[in-house]
Every structure is written in structure tokens, then in C-alpha cells.
Length: 112
Length: 120
Image 1: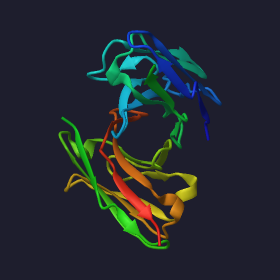
Image 2: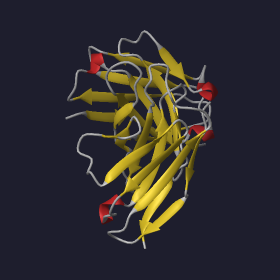
Image 3: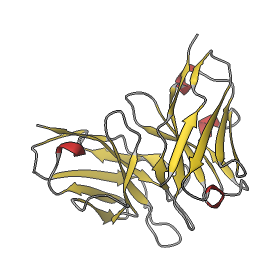
Image 4: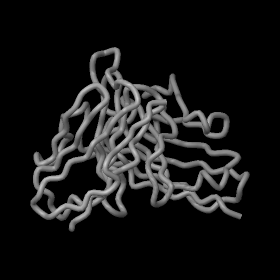
């Protein structure tokens, strides 16, 4: 199985300031079709997960442009350019390049 | 818009069985692959199972093979998860998730989840 490792575990951020979350996979996420199936999910308190970013850097429908994804191969980053109160929650990276799908352990974004 | 509504969760004794359902609407269910993902309260996400849009292919987390069975009824726009020989460690919120369209894909929409508690 592909192991997904996220850092940091927790990220206290001041409103309006940027936040960054890293995700590393135990092997390359490049699929045989040439795509890299790395997604980022947001889970607000008491809510189900919500897709933010797919295939490294594509924002899903309705996702604000303050969220951006980057990376390649085994190293990926989610950035929030200016954190807002509604961004509080846990963020997960997820790989869908290979079954079983696997998730990072989560990064809690909270307001300082 | 996409709506996924899980049901069937509850309290069950160890060794018991439950069948979860996920009613889909807002999209052509029969065209999309589907997943089940679970989450122990306060913990991370764990992929459970996958079924192809036409039911022709299924996959499971290795630790669940032989106990859980995924199925779908495209005439009813409903996804199922039959869970047998339940253990305390199966206690979790179970989410159904719709896959994106085309080729190799990933979950792009999630239901609200249904809580399964395995306890005597």
C-alpha cells in the first residue's frame, strides 16, 4: 500500500495569513496514464470530507481560489493564501493512483 | 446537485451484521463508480470498498475481505455495503462517495455518513 505522510499535524494560523500543508507519498503517484491522482480534502468540524483539489493542482467546483495545490512525484503541497475563519478544520491528502486508496493522517488548521 | 444519503447505521453486537445503503440523486448514478470510506470518530479516513459503475468490478481493503460486500442497484440509484462478523474496530462513520468520471478516478462527492457502533 502507498503510505501518505502529512506535516505538520497542526497548524495554528492568524486570520488573513497563509498556511501550508505538506504531503509525501511512499512511492511515485504518477499513474500509467501519465496523470498524478493526488487530491486534497477539507473536513470542517462535524462535516463530511469535501474535495478541494484533484490531480495535484486542479480546484474542484466551487472551491475558492485562495486554495492551491502543487508538487510532483512524491511531494505535494496545499497552500491557503489567506486563511479565513471558515477554513478551520482538518485537511487530508489522498492518493487514487493505486488501490487501495490511502489518506494522509490529517492536518488540523486552527486560528491562533 | 449531487446528493448522497447514507442510512442503515446503528448499534450492533460483535459478530452481528448490518447493511448500509446510500441513496444517490442529482446525477446519473449508473454512469459512476462508487466508494465506501470510513472514519473512526476523531480519527482519520480509511478507504473501505469500491464498485465499478456497472457492478462488474469490486475491490476491498485487505483487512475487510470476506466480511464486507459492496453492491449496487442502478435501477434504484442505491449503493449498499453488507457488513458481516462485525468487530469493535469496525465502529466508525461510514461515508459513501461518488467517483469522478472517466478512466482512473477519485472520490469527488461525499455523503453525510452513517454511524456504525459495534458494542455489546
